[in-house]
Length: 173
Image 1 (cartoon, rainbow, N blue to C red):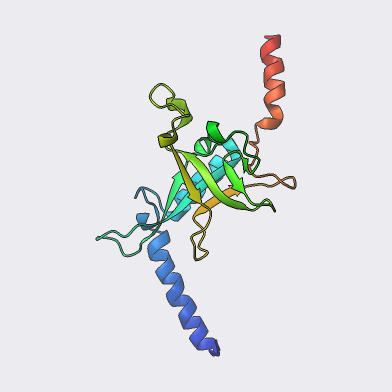
Image 2 (image 1 turned 90 degrees about the horizontal axis):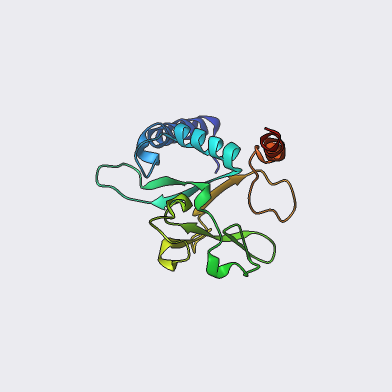
């Protein structure tokens, strides 16, 4: 940018201060309950327990808010392939992919699948498709998971490795 060290340092300090007003308050959370650290801790816990974590990046202006970019966390159990698309080879575990395996969109149930008494997962009104990026290239969905293999589109819970032993112990008991 052609700045000298003092200009760059001043800009960096101002930018860090501005970021802190978003990240260290509940401004960053669509639900207005967590700071960025709280959302990050929740995402980490979800990734360990479920294998992945999701957040939707929203543009959500509020009259009393300074910033409009907000994150909405989504229970990863809600990311799934709708029943009517179960034979679509471009959707893996709710993640729609392109010919190279890059995510292009996500199918998310509007309600947790555990609410089966009230909501029927086959009803198309209970599903939402969210593009991975806006038309101008901004990421819409943050999907965190450890990719262990080529072509993998979802993470694995740390408990996956011990589930067989739990089953065997249960059978033994």
